[in-house]
Length: 435
Image (cartoon, rainbow, N blue to C red; front, side):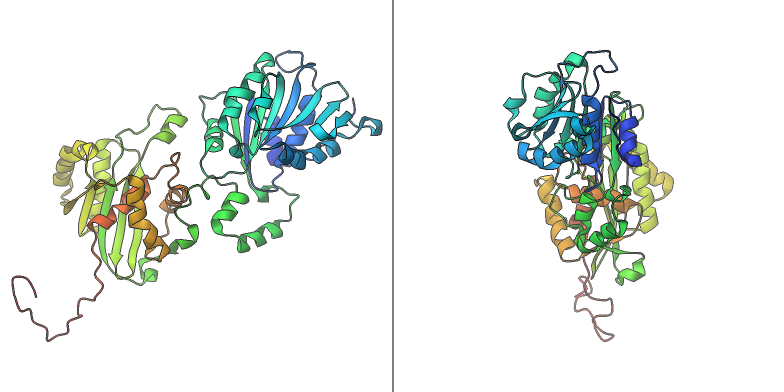
């Protein structure tokens, strides 16, 4: 049989070397996803038996794109180039252009398909399938139609695509990092990981594209453009309080979560757990300077200690914890720890006020970010916050840090005038009220 000569970079080779049955590859644009798919399709199509010893002679290999025309545009020419025609020393015996069928020299076939007509995908037996741009397909195409076609010969699959927020492709990508899914493995690389691409050109695109678009398209970030309610361009950063240039009063709010540390849980379950989030914000004439958002999965006593330590460090004018059963669970522990630590913050009630969480967060934060009234102090917490902000309000993403920050709106008061605004001669008319 003629030898195939594929030029794969190291990230692509990680996929090839993997023994996983189901592989999920999230990669940046021009990162080599299609080249990898073509190489895998040809390699799998030339097998007569698989690792399980099954005879594959009557089983096809499929490449599925969101539409048939899209699939032809992406993979057809590349398959023919890499495989080569048999009369010229290649492995392709014949092609049927209009329906996208390639017959290999061992008699097996590679077919190009579109997922937009699911009923045309039923009733076949496959040994291998590549699902390209899986995020643009309905998840039931895999779950209900394609996956059963692989059962006869215990076939394999490769899912590839560029992320677009946290959707069903993201959920599948997470399976590959979860030890519960023993047959799955996930891979990630950026456009810059492809050595065949001119690196300087990619960096030039960084300069002309929005930060979120670059993260999605070239860095293959699932945290980019997933929600649409907030824009990364509206976020301002400073390295110090002095750089902010304002001066205000501190407020602290906490959005408590369930009191589980996640110990003993598998990864997929842990990722679904909410985190406690404690927002530390300085409020002044220039708006909000977010000093820190402390977050984590803690037991009830540790959650109380984290909250009180923040109050002891920043000495807020007011501090609030979201009302409800979780706050009630913290009550006795809070009293004990306040006495032990000698910290007695001015606790104020914060509630959802009958608003849905999405409305509450948008009301408190969206306008402030758009008008430059919220500034973030650089810190390790920034990444987690930005991931949640750019995903909001995606139901598959967490929003604990956003929720904690939004509660600042309920307890804070902005002083727009300096302390000496009235001058030295001002005297109150009423000593009781101060006016």
